Image (cartoon, rainbow, N blue to C red; front, side, top):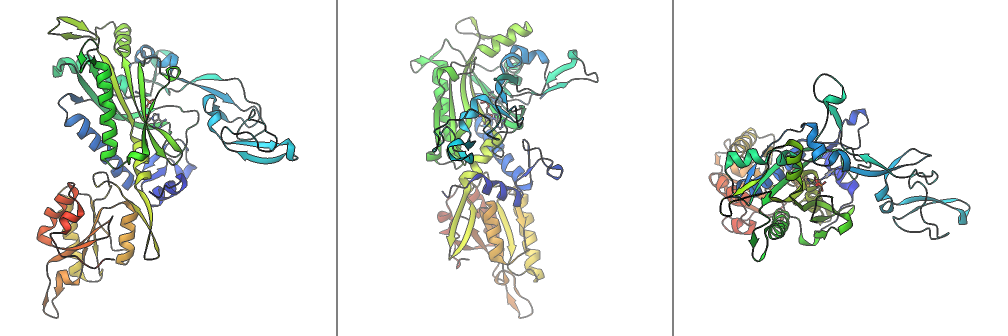
Length: 497
Ligand code: GAP
């Protein structure tokens, strides 16, 4: 892979309509981002395959869409009011704020006394090569002392109802998980599920992060794809306690998911949380890390939350949140395995992985090699000559036909064909269809068209000549996972461009 740096991705994402800074015309917020026409397709495709693979196709899963605003007591019972904090320090000079636990991961500005106060930017965690000093002051201005750390709660406060008073105080949810826990009994009773079973949910979450940044990696508004998988901790599966067995299974299933949609094994790794790093509710947590442009960082977490949440909500609400085991004739509080992924981080990982720069006959080709299922546009229909009415009208007819099959299909005639191909490469469109003079013929010369169009493959740039009548079958195969070579073998090749 031609590993891109973050600036390259941010610039491509803006230029090609994937992701824009929120409220950009007012200077932007820096902590929220808007998904443009191609970004929203990419993001929806990621959510769709996740929902299909993890919720719809599994007999042990159901879905939920809980509200973002919840009863304030939910957040007291869950521990978020008291514990959902990060340690924060302020610079007394420039007033910038930092997470105390991330100071060691930042490069720092240093006015070096050994070189008459010359200014250096020193890499994270390193000492100055001239005076050997380590960072003690503000990493940003290099001058200010830092305050002692204070705990800062990350939840956004708001008021439910027309009166802004303490009684109406609630929070924007900082995770989708709690909406699942408080609906555990509703789902259990209405769906008559047996343990083990899980509830999946996709939705927005909000955290007032002290140091948002790195594009869509850490934002104050983001989306999560979360599963709470309930198991009977007294059960034994394959000789292991059921919660430990299912934890391993979910780790494997999540890794498979990311690999299935194009993330390369060498860019994925598992990271076990140290005991002192574990959240207060967790028996064990494993992160799936991805090699982002900022280095190895968390893409998702898979935690064993034990029975903490159900017990807390049972205590907080006074309602029993147990499961009755018919065989053992006993009530149990299930343990929970929680695979929790960020939608935006998955978008960023897929953009990073897809980005390639190649040299094609002395010219630079930028290509996003998205998996076809997540590619925002599946097919582009392009006219070889936009001045020929029959060619243009045939293109529109094909665009409409292919779009009606549910494949996002675009028409473009705003440049010469070579340029059009490169534009589609740069947004990751897996296939282009070109209509030319041969397709439609020339009525004035009495020449009939051959009724064939060219399909061009993004990755190999191979081209085949396919009868229009076969287009839907060919794309059903290609977009359904068939290899290009297998489909190409059925049709004559066309010289490439
Ligand atoms: N319910 C468990 C939970 O929320 P988490 O590790 O805090 O666990 C899960 O969040 C995932 O949500 C993370 O792995 C990450 O992908 C995503 N996420 C968390 N905070 C985020 C933020 N500020 N911006 C973007 N994504 C975030």
